[in-house]
Image 1 (cartoon, protein in one colour):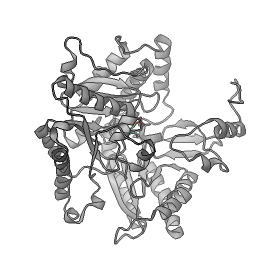
Image 2: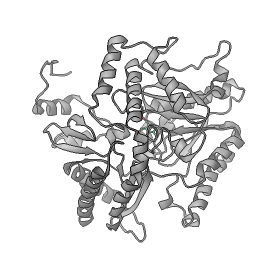
Image 3: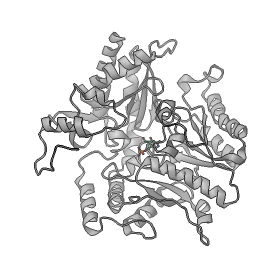
Image 4: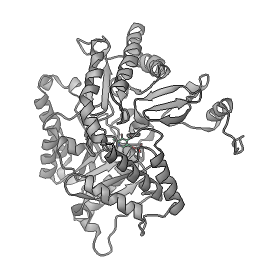
Length: 465
Ligand SMILES: Cc1ncc(COP(=O)(O)O)c(C=O)c1O
């Protein structure tokens, strides 16, 4: 039970802290770590910056959580939300449509690659992944291949937390408490070239062929008639930004076609400019059967997700009494659709895709300066999306023990970077990495700040190992 009544006055910091500890449950958070420490409370944002309860400014080097593409404090997007809420705050997409969902679906169909023209909205990325898997399953039942239900995805890849999406996810540590999993999740190697097996470690093309062919081998092993889809991110986030080797996606497409398996491009992070294109599949030139999206479609001014697919996949659902037996109440919420349209207007007006493409080499070069530090093993990524892998020994690429990683990342680095005014992410669900994914409006002055703060914190971290 809460002890606070709703109040017209905003809570003072002390009361906020008390209520945060007593009433709020933060996600993926060790609540114990805030027993004696202040909960960081972010109160407002402006451009690439956010401000905490004390007025301290931070560079938002993670775009919130890979979300805030156009940056914070855009009143034109907020006004679009207010106007839509006044006109029609809510109506479901169950048997009805509303203008903003139709307009947004048409606009996304124009922007999407190839023949992808049919948009099914959700409210989040997990729901988008869940929907794509459910579509694949029902589609194959509808076309007379009822045995196809399995999904292939990559080791350490994150695809969401709902039970279906969790079964697609390749991170054992976050699945274990929720076992048994939904049946059908099958893992294949990811495209971490820095950690490639010895026999392909010196040849990126050979590594790409091998890792794509592992998908072929997994499908053969499982029985092609049992496999529904392959779920891949254009650049895998979890593990620290693994771009695809040259030729990887072309080979994966061939493999999927050979076995009649659907290729799902999970673009919850990689779409909407993160890689300098509306969709990651456009950057790497491949043709998915389904794209899943969320996050950047609204730059976080309101929640929205979805999947985009083609006439071919919707065809069995367009005849007779058949329908896709799936939906959620708030999917394609009118306010979120109005926000997404206003967000895409900003993309166009400010040529954000062109901005990312023009500045990504400078971003990479600035971060690569950090490779002179003994703790920096690898800097990798594309667009405005980078991972920096930390190592104990650069020559051997030896990584940290679990205890060292805990001390290094949670005990020191994450606090040090935040205290120094940089929001980014330290993650050791694979090998220890620092991740950067800033708003797409950032330029050299922001890249320099990230490099300077990282240089100082990583240098200090090295002395503490
Ligand atoms: C690739 C990918 N898929 C799915 C998800 C799940 O999205 P959400 O947190 O909106 O459910 C994420 C979240 O980070 C993601 O990165």
